[in-house]
Amino acid sequence: DGMEIESLPAEGGIPRAQITTEHYRIYLEKYDPEDTGRLMEAAYRAWAVFFGREPHRTAAPAPGKEAKPAPRLVVKGYATPQSYQAGGRKDGTPAPTGAPNMGMYWTGTSIAHFYAPSGKDAMRYMILHEAGHQYHYIAMTGNGGATAGWYIEGLAIWSGSSSWDGHTFTLGGGVKPGPLKAPARALSQITSD
Image: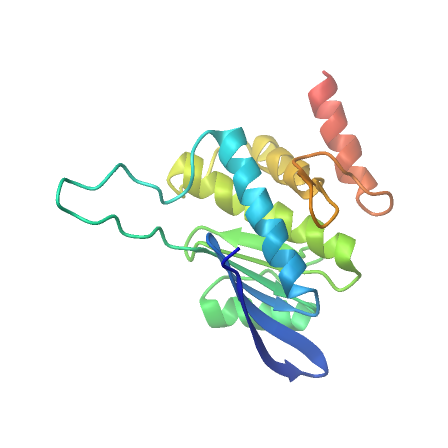
């Protein structure tokens, strides 16, 4: 499948990896890099169908010219709030310090940052939420954002609630019980009116 995983030296006992897939370059702390790479490629394919276009894809090259590969989307996932904030500062992304912020897509760097200290379901939700913002902004707005905050967050919450069993990805189809109930409830109220 063309995925490359580079193990990086652990920091503070936390394993780290750099994952390169066809469409992504992902820095990840703590969680399974192979599963995360497959998840993100599956999400990319689903977003391409849903939105009807891909980020960074341009028309065919002029005759006699070779097509250049599209740049990979960059996503960075951290195990702690401190590493999330430090990573954002290092990349020039203003990672907010106020609760309950756990992630951010910043148009200035085109990098999606998040942290998920509490388990793989939280990690999947956060990576899909922030990468959902990233895909939407780049593919649909030229990375300029959209004006309706409820719409932007609704799409990201819906993306975050996608289901993944390691092989099958269903966009927007798997809200888990627990702390994700409130966003799911809010989204159902928006879509039921």
